[in-house]
Structures are given as C-alpha cells and as structure tokens.
Length: 208
Ligand SMILES: N[C@@H](CCC(=O)N[C@@H](CS)C(=O)NCC(=O)O)C(=O)O
Figure 1 (cartoon, rainbow, N blue to C red):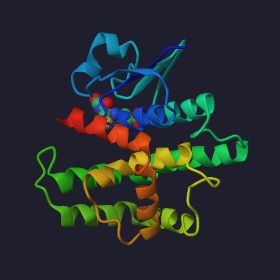
Figure 2: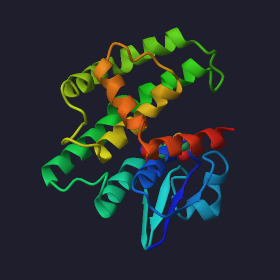
Figure 3: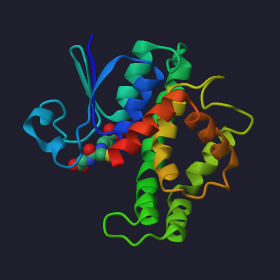
C-alpha cells in the first residue's frame, strides 16, 4: 500500500511525519502549506477541512493528526503500537487529553513567546498564559510521570508521541517547564529518539 502524508513539517503535520519516521515507513511526503496550498481544490479533495495533516494509505483517507497516528500505530506496530486493548484505550485517552487540555493554550503561549501574528514577543507573558491555561493539566501529567518512564506501559508508544507532539509547541517557544520536572525529563527522552530528530530537521528546513 502506498502511504502519503500531506503537510509541511512546520505545522501539526509534524506529529504524523514523526510517527511515520518512528515506524521507519516508506512514505511519500507532500509538503502542503497550511495557508494557500491547503485551500486548493486538489488538496480539498483529500481533506475538505483545508487543514494539515492528512494521510492516504491505499484506499483509506484520514485527517486529524491524532487519528492518523493511532491508525499508523495500530497498523504498523512497533515501536508505536500497543497490543493490549486497555492500554490502547489509555493511549486514546492521552491523545484526546493532549488536544483538549493543552493544545490551545500552548498555541497562544507560543504566539506570545515568539511574537507571531502581530503579537509582541513577550516570554514572561507567554509563561503566564501557560500557567493559567495549562498549569493544572501539566501537573496531572507530571504526577502521572512520577516514577514512570512513559505514559502507557513500559516503553515509548503512540501515547507518548501524540502528547509529546502537542508539546512541540512548548519546546518551539522555549516555554518554562521547570516546575514540571517529570514532564521535562520525559519530553527530552521523547525528542532524543532518532525519529524525532529526523522530523525536527524536516521542520527546520520547512521553516527556512
Ligand atoms: N485538529 C487538527 C488541526 C489541524 C490544523 O489546524 N492544522 C493547521 C496547521 S498547524 C492548518 O492546517 N491550518 C490552516 C487553516 O486553519 O486554515 C489536527 O490535529 O490535525
């Protein structure tokens, strides 16, 4: 089956490219930009939402980064896949959690930290935004990781990749995570993986 992932790496497509790289898959990368190219008819035929990422694998077309990654993990297995259905449910839980509890705050904080979209760069204000909007969730994550290497089970999996993929926004913006040391250590372990390093390089080139 031919696998294609759409979306420049400097976007939420980072998450699905990381998953494909982690799995060592042979895939075609179409670096669709999220502004103009994602609104062209040929791309809208793949993802009518006009957003990236999207994925085509044989006859299957998917949008939503977390769904794409859960599919890739289930289909292609190690090192992301989870055999036990209960643990897989936990991975789904953490994936929803990352999107609903963290993502919007991290995005806002990143815009402020880096001075994007007309904002003045203000790292102190960005950290305030982080604390107010995501402090409670990050404390939940920090406590969960106390004495644990990984979110689910005892090895890196799609659960870690999905949440760490959302946390990429915090790393990009160099937000201060020092009050959540277990989160910091876990993120370093996730981003130390060759699949992450390769995808970070792709994101750097895409950003220019
Ligand atoms: N929930 C979606 C969000 C996708 C998304 O919003 N992607 C941004 C790029 S980071 C995009 O395509 N924006 C274009 C737009 O909003 O028109 C996912 O996780 O895949």
